[in-house]
Image (cartoon, rainbow, N blue to C red; front, top):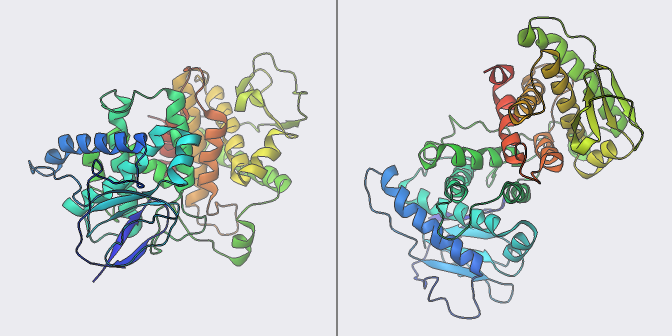
Amino acid sequence: MSVKAWRLFAVVVVVMVAACSFPSLEDEPSPRKASESVTRALKDVERFWGEQFPKLTGGREFQPIQGGYFPYTESDPPPACGGQQAGYSPNAFYCPDQDFIAWDAQTLIPSLEADYGPALVGVVMAHEYGHAIQQRIGPDDQPTVVLEQQADCYAGAWLADVLAGRSEAFKKLTPEQLDTTVAGLLLLRDQPGTPAAAEGAHGNAFDRIRALQEGVEDGAGQCAKYRANNLPVTEVPFSTRQEAATGGDLPYDDAVQALAADAQGYWQRTYPQLAGNQWPQLPVRAFEAGSPPACDKPDASAGGAAFYCPDGDFAAFDTTELGPQLHERIGDYAVGMLLGDLFARAAQDRRGAETRDRAGQLAVDCLAGSWTNDLLTRQDQDSLRLSPGDLDEAVSALLAFGRASDGSGPTAFDRIAAYRSGVLKGLSACQA
């Protein structure tokens, strides 16, 4: 029979099964040498599952990985999985029939650790160990995208231990370190336009971060319930050749005009549900860098380069640097996220609610997500709608101008969770 080697990235290799045994991490001979962060992470993930596995299985004893751990390089490739030697790739994977984990120690792990810190390395290893948990308790009849996001969720359940200070290997993460870890997850998404039903699909960044956060918030027991019929997967293919060719991105000026008009229309329709009165037209002013319109107490976003002005009742943003940079570096819906934030600030302020404290900022993010929900779920094919990759662009934008720095205010991790709630549940989620 053929089996899948469960990989971190959206690559799934079909291999033939063969019997073989491998050494443990401690017995691993040179030149295969695991980094200290990987070694600490794997031992701590085993510690975590030693505690959690009996709770998920009605008291069954946890059996750690038996096949071994294998760092590999281009000159020293990973062991054969099922009788076929895999070629070198900057990846990490779990081989189910041989029950081992292997990872690229030449490029992948050093790059992730250097750019995003050891906690992301831990999440990578916890994800692969999540596939080992699936091998032990199931399910084995679900689409790849479900199993991959379940592994993400299991990684989040382990990360919750780190955040709570219970990890024996990692210090409790600072808000800035947590946001940096989440930023690294953007690397691990499928290419925009990948169908969720495709063989090997892992999910877009929005869905994979959702799964990780669900593990953090609700624990491994929630992850174990993941099935195709209860998982909110937002990954979709491109609908036309033109959309695929452009990546679904409108030119900058067109994006600003279309998105601002759509947000205006959304709030005209829905603001009465939120506040009980009509929505006055919100002026949106673009300004050149360093020359914002006068405002006594601006309610700022994006590091002050965008704001809602309560006393003048208008929104403004830097259209010479901020807007074009977001569009060029991330995509058109990064601009949509910026505009969504400004309109949500206006909605929150106009109804007499707070925007500047932690709870107010999270309410703003949820309200911005409710507009995204409208774009995501509308059936009118002639109106503005989301393209594949747009939700990832929104998450990237939140990370770009919502990262924790001094410990005050919510983290980007928290803001993404609030935004996700609005995206998946609509305006009602923001009225609780």
